[in-house]
Length: 454
Image (cartoon, rainbow, N blue to C red; front, side, top):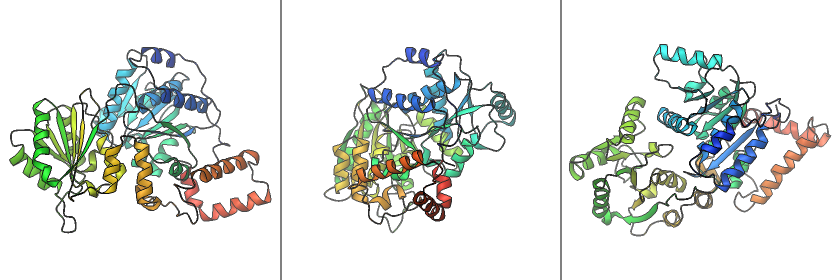
């Protein structure tokens, strides 16, 4: 069903929670945050479900924006839910939200998969009764036994980490609640118009003042000893470091160091006097969580990892991101990894080690800018639409004529034309519109149902 026809919730501007929250913030909102909040507020005021994508680079302040929206729902007597892809990230969100709320009378419930049965039953009772106003969790929020009394707003963080059916299940937990999906992975506007065609798009393209840019340097293999010595200097100064590898185990097809081999070398030889830990995607979830919690707590000096840490982890004391075999990574993936540092007050560094004498073009692009949207445009230009974020795997159709970089304005005009047809002729009574509707339903029956989720 087209969301223009669905009955949604028209949230009023009560300001019982929003105004005191804004007054108590220890920082000023950026112009980009104010603009995005205005767009979200206008959506939430309408009697139709909001379905909006919030794009923002690492550190652009998406969580604060989401919290404003959640408070708007709560002060209208509804519940809000924030779903994160990992338990550690859910816990971080819970801590951040609780700290920002200060003394505001908002009941926050963290629903994790590892709760004891008695704790889970109590949490579910609070959600079902409405006592818990703001729920934060992982996929635990979409289990069959989870019921909300009056869910009005769903926030989905790092939305591409969830299957579309999971997102549909959470949205159906309320009476067609407003939905805001967030992504820290910048993508070009042209790709957003095609990949998220049924979502309105808001962009945070400005970082808060005072946030230091990460210094990015390219180094070839002979520089490795000096690079590792620099990592030691940073740890000696009380900082922490990541060392990231592209594969887990050595492969004949990939002439790169593996994370496991590197961990043994670094922990036993290079940094034998430091606390070195290993994390990768094949480890059991509880082991991964334990390693990350020790790193967050400062009990690990050097974390050897694969790209499992590319999204979400917030460790302000980490100042070095060393990326091995960098030519094996895509541009956007490199940018996400760089975003793991530069989150504290100290100057941070991203060191990119490559195997050749001269770095490939995409590494030169990466080192030249910290702007995630500029990097995304370059990534699209260098890799093409089909390979960008595995678009082919997502089932997106190849364009027969359009070029996403060259035809951005044309794509925007096509989207506007489609919206205009729906607004002017909702039942598609015009014969031409009927024929178009039949063709779309025949060709994209399943996709049309799922696209509406985002």
